[in-house]
Image (cartoon, rainbow, N blue to C red; front, top):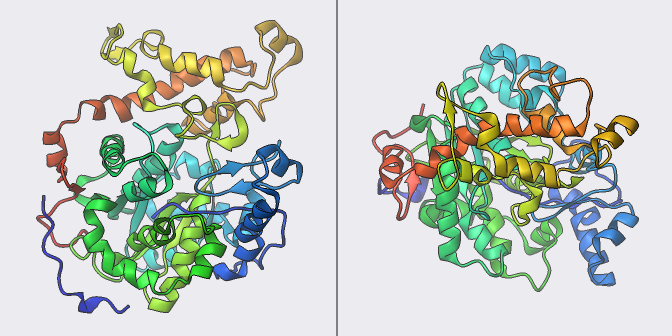
Length: 473
């Protein structure tokens, strides 16, 4: 589809991924919002140390007690990421039981399990957003994906499934940014054409999450940049090179596209960027992983200057890599993550399939996924069942158990049994993960251009949404 011609730009008075690196340095006062107040003690400090010592190795940085959290790198100590420290350093606020209860009261729905169990753990201006909603002021949701792999993995699903719940619970519109430009700029060997193709493939998995087509707008940056650019310019004009360096740790060897991209990702946080989809002035709510926060600290500061509504944010923890909780699942290292494509061989694409009463037989359907869990998932017990029974299991570090705590709907069922033995928990994770992947990949793997068109999408220069209505409700 071709979007309606953009109206005049006189209405202009002036996403989400983000970057953060925490080091053992002084934190800002609680609630600080200006990036300049915290960046020199965090990202910039790390950049200086790296320059002085020649980019020290991971083991060296860990030995010094540092944790590194950026959109491109996550490292932690033996005890995992210190989220309390991130809250203190970033100046955000922890989510409280009272806020969760208030969300349930306002929506009339039970809170999503990601919220109940603390996977989403901190926020910015959540109370202000809920206050406005209670008075009848609706908001819109903004989230996104940087297309760096052929399909989404389990960690990528976290913000999208939570966003789907938010959209349904609050009955609000949603914009989803696919940052194909970002991946082209940050990945040395990735071409523009390949980045655009990966965005197209990822869009299939995203659409399969089940968002409301009438209230969802999906776009690739390289397709929608003409509409975004006037807003992006207003942001770029208000961010100095010093602020960009202090916020993101850029060096003189980084290409200038990386520096300018921050404004592109911030632009969808303002409704004015979507005049054919959203009414101007609507507040934005951004579900994101905590590593994306610096982008939106910058965005919120610029909002003050422009007198545009300041976006509210809610942050999730990382889903740990299969190898352990010292880092997160990575699209760049296939063995660290469970991908939706890990079920392909038994979804009619080369392997045997069996059905009974319309349901897939658990043991027949996901051999590849089970094999990956058994081979790579870090266990808190011994290598054999005998060792596990003799020594017990350390469920605090058992990756499969930690996944089950997140993905099982029943708050009391974390392992399918009380033994806690990895030999039993790991197969249970396979049984739990495979239906999720079936729902969110089996159908999009067969999505054709015709199906995309039904959602307002076109396989050339595509944006997804309905062009026959001016403003989403």
